[in-house]
Length: 293
Figure 1 (cartoon, rainbow, N blue to C red):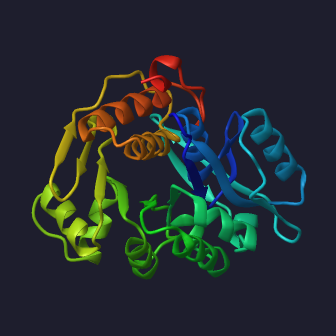
Figure 2 (cartoon, rainbow, N blue to C red):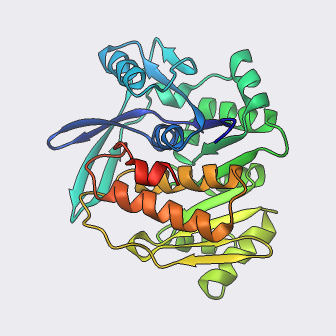
Figure 3 (tube, helix red, strand yellow):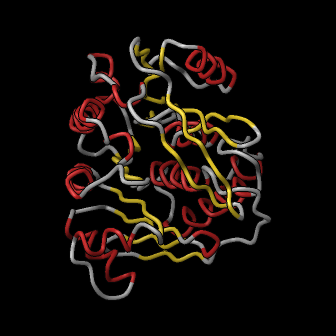
């Protein structure tokens, strides 16, 4: 990109603890990492504890050239951890409660960042605690109207409810959800009919610019008020799917900021996500054949 846009991953940052060891994770961090690889000036906004796990996260961010200036240090809560179990390559999560990223504070520095951000991506998980939920809402409300506010819903365990989902949708202008998440939203918002009909209902109900619907290895569907792009997905040898959805969202975001055609954005996002599925962990280095598109 000629002038790198400012892109924000807003919410949890944590250790994904696998049976064989731990890896840095959290959907907003994954989004920021891939956004940076795809040419954005990306900032994670989160909090870590004043502990060894938090210091290790800062060291890894530095190695990845991701700034930690907006990663706060919480002196009273530990750095977040998630215990991850893989079954046939698909992750299940045990997300520990009452951790640093539950307590992100909205500061003058975050208000300044929000005012100049071109895009921010946020989910439902980091809103499980009122402190971070307030800060995320304040950040989104401080953004310029034309900026992208991407709600990558990421439903996890029981850490969501209709109030969190609805207040997020009303602040968002882009929704990204999966084929496992749409059936949860359908009864919440009385969505009926086939998948495109339900997605168009969400688009209209919340005055969204775009809905992105992912179907794992079966590709994705992008819808705006006037256009639809369907992609069948790409064959890949799956190592694990952790972070694939976040990489898709990053490619979607950077493509929209470049005003690329919807079909081109959809194709690129599928290429990025397929590559991430073929690698271990959520934040592999993307090859130049993908980043240079």
